[in-house]
Length: 135
Image (cartoon, rainbow, N blue to C red; front, side, top):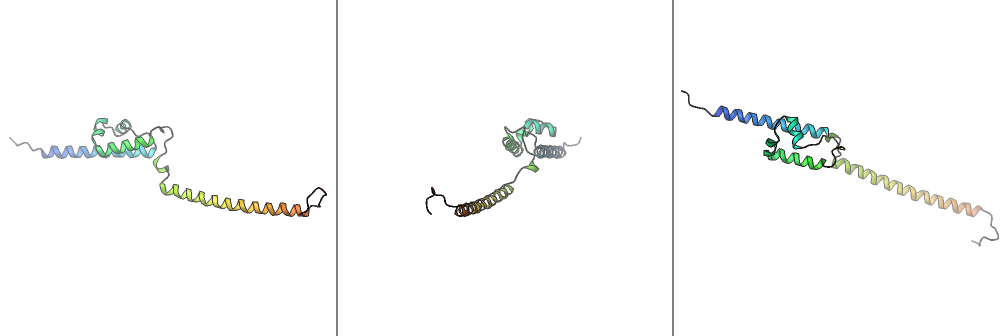
């Protein structure tokens, strides 16, 4: 009789574990990319694994909770990951808006000065009536 060798069983279990992890991570990424709600149930269903197994994986559990919290309350208006604004793009938009605001403020001031001069010229060109006070 051959002695029992547990090594092949352990190797098979390790391969199965890594395959399950990769399916869970792939499902998580696809749900996030699509803008779908990320929950334990949705990840488990997409990866065809059990929810209880997901809860035992600390790193995957943390990712699911983080993404779930981000999309909480916005399930019907979630934005896919590829369309979400980055901090750099938001800063760029803010800088552009501030520059445009400065330009408009300067233009507004210039137009007010031109209007004041035009009204002054118009008043100076108008004939004096007896009711107008002398300048």
